[in-house]
Length: 118
Image (cartoon, helix red, strand yellow):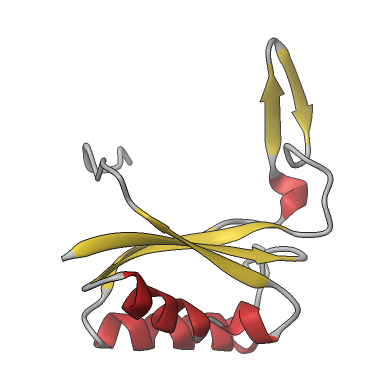
């Protein structure tokens, strides 16, 4: 089955370090739903934009790479039989109804290369 990355665009990530379960309810609910359907491969929520560090050449700065209204708030990888099925899963992402949006892209190659070091 093909894999698709779903990039979530929003004004900022809902996953602040002090986010409450209530603030994360719609995001986590959608992730749980996709996981229960057996489509979820991996999911990653990113911290808010003010925690980003950007690098251009030899210059390191605090903040996101681009100043934009929306940032990548997170992403997940799903398995789906085709692009249409992936779009149907992505369409249910809460960001699409809360002022943001999502982008669906076929995964070309790659995968987890090693377990995280603790």
